[in-house]
Image (cartoon, rainbow, N blue to C red; front, side, top):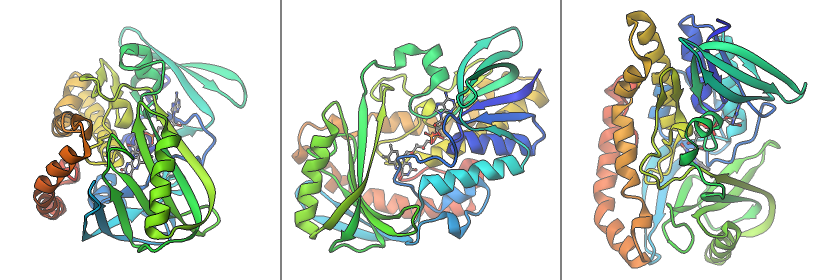
Length: 383
Ligand SMILES: Cc1cc2nc3c(=O)[nH]c(=O)nc-3n(C[C@H](O)[C@H](O)[C@H](O)COP(=O)(O)OP(=O)(O)OC[C@H]3O[C@@H](n4cnc5c(N)ncnc54)[C@H](O)[C@@H]3O)c2cc1C
């Protein structure tokens, strides 16, 4: 056998799994299709317990200049309410690069510009085909376990379960980075709940640091099954007027998924010795508005499941599914509560007005309880 574990994807889930496996002495290879450090369209916001799941402290230099300390939510009728809540604020390029580095420091092998092309299950092992894109070289190797951590367009899951994907894109997001001024508080994450702007969750504004070390306002949204640029322009125009946003758009950043986000089978953890983690497992949660915590936790738990399966000679998928029960149940439950169940902004407004106070109390309570829970038993927030 060439490797104990081969991992497709060098994002949050892949690097976390690679680090925990390598630390426990497993011969681990993780590959990333892009040249690293790579950009990744993401708001890069997480909560305190994220560091606990990662099991390491995030170095200050990997975070944006400005720390987010408050959340302000705007309801469809324009009314708003805010609260104090500290969050991590980072760009995925420096952050994921750091995760890649600490996984390699732990002993995992890493190849960038390398696509994990396919997997073939054999008797007791997996045959993995990689394509090194720079060298234009195809490499075949064997691994006892394979982890698909390749995000929302997961290559291996698509090969095994093409029925979970569509030929046209199912959802898209778009961010504008603005070099300018706004009548907004830089320490606040702004969420705008309005189905004309985003029919999957909220549209957003916050501040981010780009590679030049300067801070930029980010205005962005997502939309399923419609022209994302049209929705983003609608939102941006309204925000420019409301908050006197001035300045030039210096960067546009988009993301599209072909995974069917509404399918009842979206959450899928794999088969036999091929495990899905993070977005590849369908764990991104539109109700919570985040996915990196689920990605890191699933990466960590997939590694733990492999360790346990090896020790006890048990079925790895069964062990992994058991460890993941809380996360998968929460994600499936939330999938049924996504805002597309509402037909109008009025319906969404009534629901939010009713549930917001309860959600806020739960958030404070559960984040305090997370401080005493073990890393692997963290409750993902908001609930
Ligand atoms: C616009 C937007 C904003 C978001 N904001 C937040 C937020 O604020 N907070 C939060 O927690 N979550 C947020 N999310 C969700 C978050 O980005 C994902 O849940 C998270 O990145 C999932 O991590 P992952 O490791 O599973 O996948 P990814 O981070 O997508 O990593 C997968 C990696 O695999 C690589 N890859 C793909 N195919 C292959 C292949 N065949 N071979 C090798 N490598 C491959 C990709 O290049 C990529 O680097 C946001 C998502 C979007 C789209």
